[in-house]
Length: 138
View 1 (cartoon, rainbow, N blue to C red):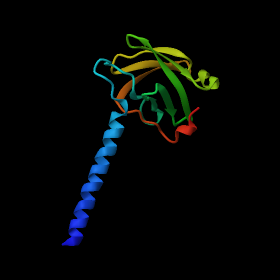
View 2 (view 1 turned 60 degrees about the horizontal axis):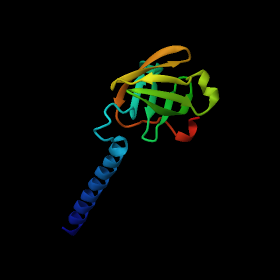
View 3 (view 1 turned 90 degrees about the vertical axis):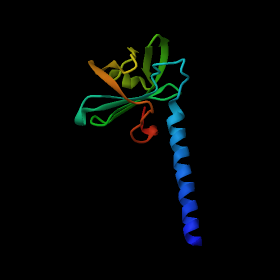
View 4 (view 1 turned 135 degrees about the vertical axis):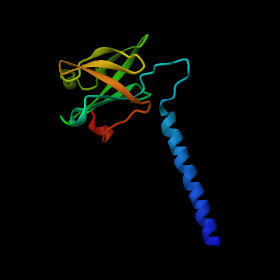
């Protein structure tokens, strides 16, 4: 009976720990209701093995991941007002792939020029997703 009680307490503590961590992750992109349409979150463009991921965190850093072409780009986003944002790459070398540009976010997605082509990124989550180790982004 004592073993079952210990196991039950361990299960409850484990469940509380998991819920707490989930709340911390989910709250990482919460914004006041006065800021609708925040860019924070994850976006995807393309299909199948040609998909690219674009994520923005609360510090306004962006992470662009194109696994097929082994491209992992880090940059900054600055809010310009009324759904307009400006992106710029941390490494100037990556500007040939993802040039500095303005994007217009409508609450569902936005378009970006990547290597001279227009891509439409649709929001898939309010939580930013980063593929692999952040230190691999430049």
